[in-house]
Length: 196
Image 1: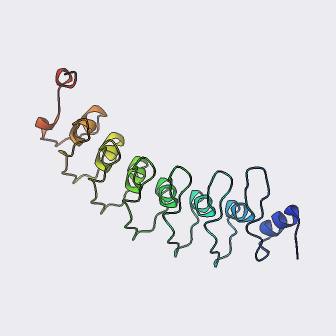
Image 2 (image 1 turned 45 degrees about the vertical axis):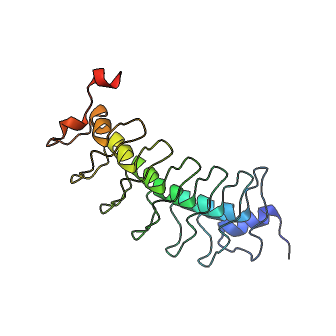
Image 3 (image 1 turned 180 degrees about the horizontal axis):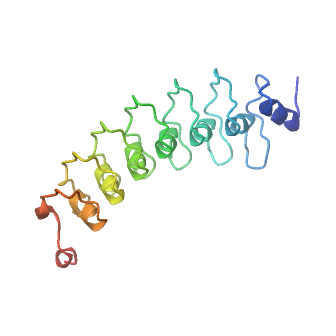
């Protein structure tokens, strides 16, 4: 049986989804029925077509992750859009990675890791320990966390450096996020030293 787009939309709203219609597009952006169902948080528990893409290469998994409703057994973290931005990056952005997530090194096209995304958004787990992961500029996860004040109280890798020689301590200092008991002042360059 073939359904009209409006019928499909109504079925999604009413949680009466038809089988094998997930790939149909409903607008000029290429939004599929599956994307629309993800938007309304009504994908079935056994949904498995996470790879379906709209015209911007945004997968159903990206859409679902952006609404924080990926199923517990989801494992296709490396599905990426045209910029290499993965489902894992989206889940990290919104704090929706599972507690046992270990693929922090997944990168986008700029070598921005999932861990960088989580650090930027303050979503790193308390036991995170891969501070050395770096992007194309040598900017580590620790640098990113230091910039936004998201380093844990027991952090001790202040001497990690990016490609410009900036230490994590320097970044934390510049953004006023050094802990009160910080004692590694040798890692902080003075303004006159930065200008050379």
